[in-house]
Length: 261
Image (cartoon, rainbow, N blue to C red):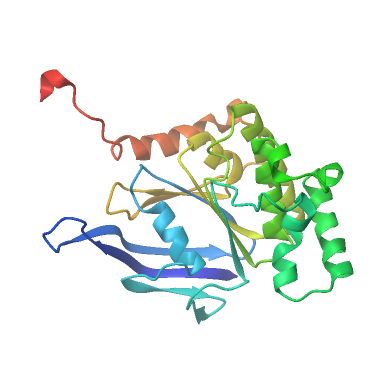
């Protein structure tokens, strides 16, 4: 069943120079995302992936086009869509458990119930023994686990993830990739995950949506019909890696050497 539908979505921004012209970030993006599907967005820097994710979250509005969720147009933010950012955006003055409970507290849930839910997701993210720690005492990977737990406690219909592992070392990134796959298998949340990392996209996604250079539009959708959990060192993923890489090669531009200027 289609969960989310994007219809000819475009986004233009006013240029920062004095020409009063506009810059088109994304153009004519049309997609169907199914209930419980894990979809990864991949494309060159500046192609509008994060812009599109912000529109899906309701943090921005399209210049043209429409976003349909459960048959209804999206109009602003809502608890049905929760974003996990590259920067963890945790409250450093609160303990881990209080960070995870924060959204539930704002929603008016009583203390015992929100503590029960928070502890459940801390256990899921293997953070139970750090519940009473402060954020500054945690590693980067643990902070992102807390961020994911804080998103999951709200039980969103769609989890939007904007390069959440980009700042982490490769070992931590691989471990969190496996953990996220296990969480997805258990919860079957609809997840949309933005990344620049091709291998990460094919490890995580049921489908990889490849975007063109700016203005970004969908170049190709590549389905990954492979067992889970997927490991980055699995050589059987190489054909999918090459398929995504081949689509991106012509979209990535490199600066010219001085001799070519």
